Image (cartoon, rainbow, N blue to C red; front, top):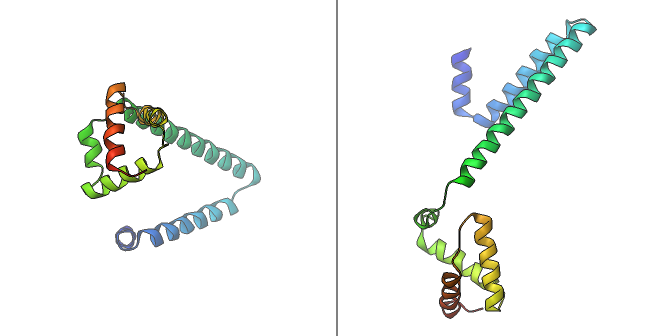
Length: 140
């Protein structure tokens, strides 16, 4: 049976997961049917405690991963490699530049705030130069 389940899992993962959930729930129902009310309460309480601990563990792991991601600085070479094609990156930059406010001071404020949210540090002069260069290249 183990080999059969493994083969089904490899062939059709979504269908397998759904059928496996159903199979396990039927096993649990049969197990509960043969228990006394006191045993059912104990079993269900134990199951709730297990689920609660699992959720807490998953949340803790997610928070730790998020902290690691926030702590690692982003370099420009990493930003460029996020897009597989330079044209796609250029398209995203163009759309962003079109949606910025017309006023250069407001553009500067928006770009600075976006950089802070992403975790980048921005130098004032570089933002102004970038706005001047990009406003020449991209129509507003």
